Length: 395
Image 1 (cartoon, rainbow, N blue to C red):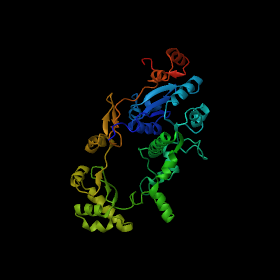
Image 2 (cartoon, helix red, strand yellow):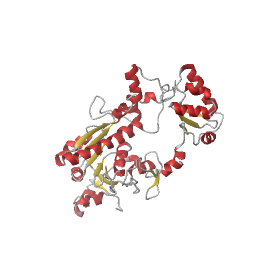
Image 3 (cartoon, one colour):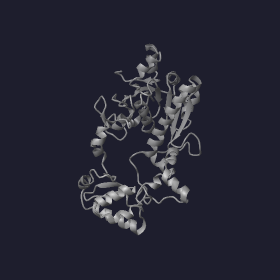
Image 4 (cartoon, rainbow, N blue to C red):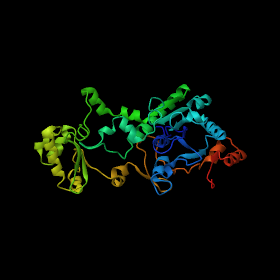
């Protein structure tokens, strides 16, 4: 059995900021890659202070742990040359600027590939590198809106609901690029040639909007929000309030689970109506709502303990963080500085994907990386004096 990290020896340069790109490269780091954040000499990755009174923010710490940071002014020729020297030692580059920005800086795929043909270069953007919307600004809500995903989230006769899990960002901007990068790295080792990856968050949102798309293809109609099989349209699959204002998630989609649920509630009369719609569906949902609303969440958690029927609590993140299943799976972790972080969302034999090294300060490793590239101390001092690079004073 192998005992090394799958991406051991792979170096990734991460030019991205905020969530999608850094989450993508975090997954690569969890697979063993060395990730170097290439930050600007101004604000750097402003995730460090976004939405928090502490610096660095927990958000920044979660998605950037275990990485190194070099701060370069890519608008200056010496900064670009330092980047190109670093890119020549790398296996992959990840960027998330608007299309055309890296080309204007002279650090695009073609420019890097000319010096390093095996480079894998991933460009993450909202709408892709081409098309009529390529240059448009956007966020998760916009990509989901265009892809028909937002239209499907929310209750019946209610406006679209917002998810605090950034679906487009994490699916299209992190998971899909990471998959493509790993595939392209495999091919580069085999063929000697790298590839350019064009990852659009809106595209991934559309491609994974499977059930609404299937409905459109099958019936020519778009499911009504809150009324599809998996969004509240049938009694056996939905969310029900408890007496204390909490909620149960009922996922008894298969007949065996629905039958077990009804029998455990002493309501065998409801068995025929798990997938009912119309009056029968409304009556069945109302019956469940009355039953579950008569007792608090803790009662129902005890009542369904050990019953195999897919009835579970809707937990807050504070409760999920203490949940024994997640604790047992190693999802509750702390880095070397004691900051709370999540474990890797996968296990892989022969390798522990846990990352305990803390997230870097802006330019924390500038001097060390430049030395690795062969810059001597006078050259580094000149770069610092010209503000082509920056490094912390106590580096």
